[in-house]
Length: 247
Image (cartoon, rainbow, N blue to C red; front, side, top):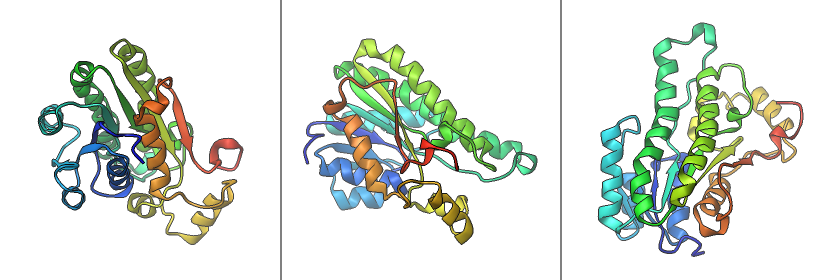
């Protein structure tokens, strides 16, 4: 513990799932966190965590979130672009509005976040941006055209941002989880269907789903100074799913 001592982090989507895990793990590692989960923040205490209801598709909302973090804790060192939504539908059946909404939240929200933290991180002498993508940023699955498009976009934007922001001491990396036990995945991907779930597990060398904290540990590493020479890279945590055929 303590690898994030002195760090101030802004984590989006902190109310549930992986985001909730990230917030708790960051605080346990010594960080002070600005997040989206009121109940999570209340449980951790104002000295460690502040909550702001935040629309990641709003440029003004990002300005407010960054301002709160700096006002509350004095500076900003880490951004975890974690907020995301998933819409499961074949291309033929998907409404254009739904496709655009997924891109707005997942891709545009990530881009706005990176843009919003450049100035405060530069003033702080540098920082780390961790963009949560997915294995769907490497490959596709039926019914996930919008989600996959957004996650490929995050992977590409991460590389561009890493090249642009290195001069300011800001590192940018992407994390690509596979099957993680969260409500969004269980409800949206149909993992609740026994046959689909078993097929998913058979494709993984590590034949189990990940717990959210297993991803949080990787995110914390990338947020910390221990990863000081890593930028513009993809970090996959998928139980070996992408290591061979079958997915």
